[in-house]
Length: 121
Image 1 (tube, one colour):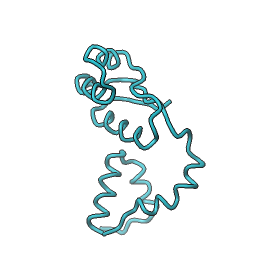
Image 2 (cartoon, one colour):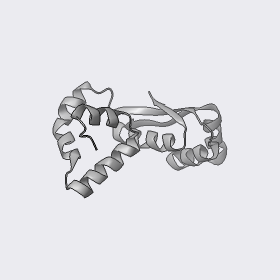
Image 3 (tube, one colour):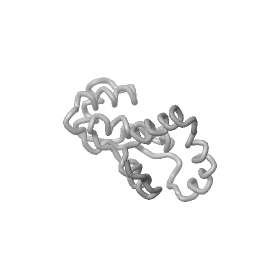
Image 4 (cartoon, helix red, strand yellow):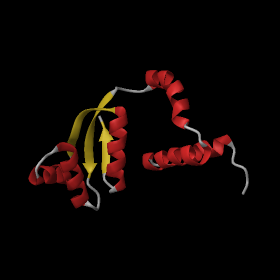
């Protein structure tokens, strides 16, 4: 196998989903005994200045092909009843309000796993 450059690695990571990056981090911890999140923590103050708001609203734009899974996830996240969760899946709308960025990324990854489209506002 040809040796990858740092730029190759970065371009590959940019194409990954959040879930794939998490799995990569876990594998690095297991295989190499390295915790890359410790490096990220050291860089966090600079990144925090560049980032947007600390809390966001999660808005469902499209349920995608698996509406039943979307309804279940909306119910899990919000505690809504079936009819209200179905209305969100059918029409889109705010799923959760004022969610911190880390939790929002986790929730977005869950929606992406079931092929639904969400955005942050």
